Image (cartoon, rainbow, N blue to C red):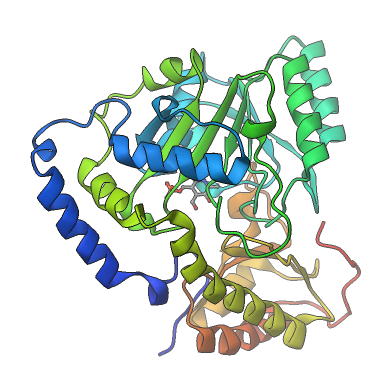
Length: 382
Ligand SMILES: Cc1ncc(COP(=O)(O)O)c(C=O)c1O
């Protein structure tokens, strides 16, 4: 039976560069086999660090020192490590968007951090609400350890924070002396429109922690991501790493592969992702325009769908599972696991024909999980 799997963010197997990656692996083994006999060290494969520094530098127009980059076992290791390094005691506060990546929620709660969520709109975290919260916390003598934010192609909502808002966030963090952790996991999975600069490139103060990944631009199975921070933050964070370094072999192969240029690979993979996003949007428009609202992401791998308030989420999950349609319910991304009338669709890996079929399957399930057939009472996503 056909399975419609829109649950987990994965890259597109149709555009995986099998032959090129095979050739890169052969070259890497021939050139670097001697180094495979050694531990990779704190920072990891120098060639890949240089390429990642170049990647960030070219996109953001600022210099990035490869010595301030440490390769990680996926960006998730960097996310967790930052939490471990900056945490002082149980219950320490971390500020995040009200909706954020479920892996981060689990990791931070798992190490005893308390997440405080800031409401969002179509441009990401609301700075007025952030300001209110920081001032309220300061008045009660509580200082968050850091602000963790997804400002580009936000997971799950797909929002991008405009430059002016990023400046406000940087200034506010500076005012309250709170470090900012910018997780740009979807950097380079960009579909359309002008690129907004990343905050690390805008921050004049130098105390900024930046996290990148190769999972979304290349493939999550290589488990490579990176942390970028200037001293003394870099050493403070990497001092908490006890894993003897990240996979040198994977890094060597990827460095060989990317020698041809990182943009070239993105140029090959992005058109298919844009087509898939458009198919999801078209499918939602054809089937659910009268009752739902959704994001139109300019990058990333997800669509965020607002459901009518009378959808019974448990019923929807059960009906959908019976129809072999899988999605991630909004509560997975709410920092307090609140039942919210949203769902997230991951489209990057789903074959085109299954997207087309899948959207009408989803629509049927949503209609069946409602207690009325009223039109939607909202016009916007938030
Ligand atoms: C915002 C965000 N950060 C980090 C990760 C972890 O990615 P990885 O560890 O594969 O680099 C994800 C994965 O979906 C994510 O969405």
